[in-house]
Image (cartoon, rainbow, N blue to C red; front, side):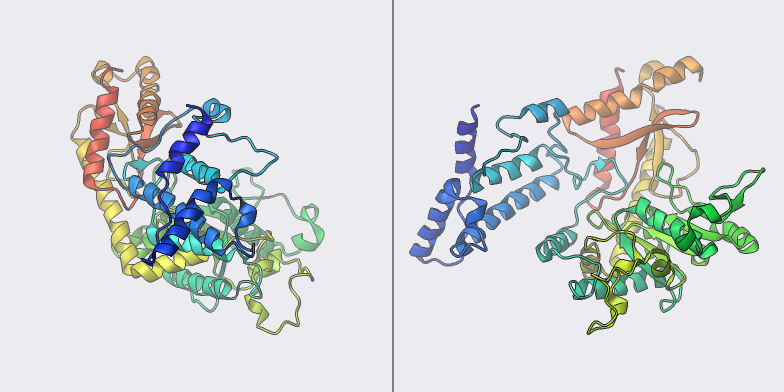
Length: 491
């Protein structure tokens, strides 16, 4: 289909702006605006003097596109994705052209592009999307993200983000209190993901042990290490894991804390994945000992289902983040401001610009309450237990670990009939290695489900199922098992 024809079809499929006023003149005006979107451009929107009505019309159309996408996301009969290879996207699909022009395109074309962008992407909120630790689509969180984008401010000073910086303080105190620290003595910062939060934890650990690093650099330090072998160097920090990415395993935090206290080492806990379990009275025992840590990474965008990105680095000792990272840039952090400059948080980070990640979490916490998060998380754990029990009874599936999973991660192999009764051997493992990739590839092409796989050590490719999607139900688990068998039986 030619691009012009496609545009005409899309134009017919875009509904006129909704009007709450029955007045015929206003409806005619709205319809006229809609018709004119093909001849209107971004420069015609606010702050253009005559741009108010056109801006409203355009944004309502964007909302209509988003609402249609959300409805399809939660429909388990819809495909998770309409898969195309990278070269197809680059070459252009049925009028969807990624190349950038020197000249502006009409608002109508931008609406078509918005529709296509969602059409060819992955519906990560689909109930059968199990591919990553962060999945699902929370509508309240989505509303929070919209508001954040509308405010379009930066988190480095109270001056330009008064509500958000205070909101961050409230959230950090709440999370530190849940860990078991005294809120008045603890500290923290939201950062762009778990890896950066872990980096902040390590930087603070190094600064605590060797504050001279800031003025004199690494050259004056001994050869410090995070992990020390028998032949040793100088350890300064131990990183424990609360919910590993693949297996969902938890380190014995009390035992590690004992060693750290004996040797005066900083203890950092990477609870990016498992931190959400702290909200469950039934399952928080898996993180027993986390209150003895010096710093913790916790990602609400994973188990708690907050829209990406939302990650926090929490420290037990107040003031260290600032002392470690501050540069006191005079163009941002003047000491003689009209307000309490303790709410200027930018000097706690090595970033300058910092996205507002707190509002969507704050709004979701308001909407659910702590107990609402607990119910959601407990249901994930029940689904994982159900999935484990079903697989254990099936002779064409084999669990990577026989024991009941500690977390919502369930790792397993599928054996097609031709491999099911062959004894374990190098040759069988070489064949088994190919099975998970082939099944996943077919799932992606058909758009029926998404599930991750990987090898690990001496274990050949296995599937990793994780539950963190609030839309997933037991019927979706049953569907996935049937789908793996359907796609794999002839491999």
